[in-house]
Length: 109
Length: 122
Image (tube, rainbow over all chains, first blue to last red):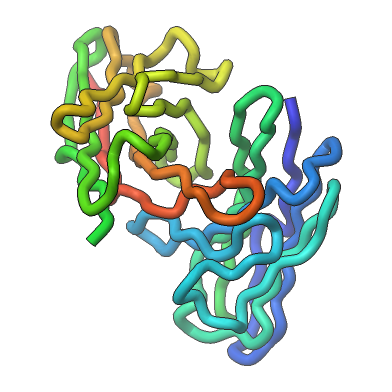
């Protein structure tokens, strides 16, 4: 099975800061990598699909990059409404299996 | 509006059975895979399994195979997640989510239900 290692597990940053979260796969997953935002008490929301594509309606301060085993999610200028937990998710198209990263809880300093 | 609406919160005793539902609307329900995701209290997201309502093709995570059953009734655009004998460790929020056709991988979940909280306690 493909393992996903997401880091950091928690992060504290100030409004306006650039924030970066990484996700590493245990083997090459090409661009089968998506990013979600989950606010407390709410369902997850898709932000980035196929590693770097912005979902419709998502602010452009969110971005994703990477391919193969190493992926990065970035918020270019942190806003108060970005407080949430962020998850990466990969899809193994050979085994038809999905795996989420452990999550990164983002807080405001 | 495209949406998935899940059934309400449940409180059950260990050993009881349960079936929760996820009703799709605003799109062709039979043309999109529906996945189920568990979130235990204070924990992360875990993929449980997925079903294609068009032909009921179903795949399970090895972690959940044999523990739950996923089904769908395409005549009423509804997917289900069921347990035959609940355990206290099944206490969690359960989400259904639609697999998208976005991009080259078609591997993301673009529409999510609001979640169903299942509490199992004696």
